[in-house]
Image 1 (cartoon, one colour):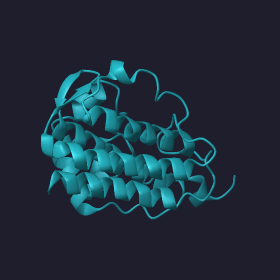
Image 2 (spheres, one colour; image 1 turned 90 degrees about the horizontal axis):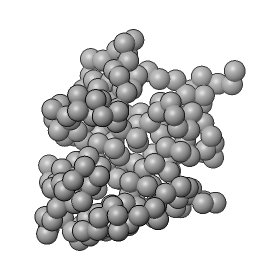
Image 3 (spheres, helix red, strand yellow; image 1 turned 30 degrees about the vertical axis):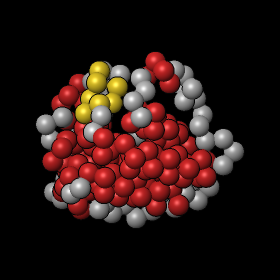
Length: 197
């Protein structure tokens, strides 16, 4: 799949998941350290970093300007604006093929975008699961992320970027297997699905 199209589809999937958030920004998510608002803030942070990084800036140049809460009083609007900004920046910068300056050193822009694609796909599922939406993943995106991630899973886990594979999780489909590889239980139940306790 064309890399720009792959990235765009992953971001659009994330934006579609955002549209299904029904106002409970404190609901728990499959990312046990984050509620819905914190999860969305994380992805918005990734998207707000995208433009300066693909424009060639270093982390030191950006500094702490993107730390903290990036959602303000209207999280949905802030998140959609960040997605639009990131899509425009990638569309403008990808043809140049420049290196991106990441925390661990310079990286090819294509590898950086594949990292972002994975982040959008997995966190869109997290958001959908947390808010009781349809969790179906785009099979083409699943295939692209799984193929890329296969050789990186242990590196990601060793660096603390993903949790352990849940022992009780049941795989068997490409989507379920991918979620498990990213430390998720495909059958995770949200408050929205299980009802009040």
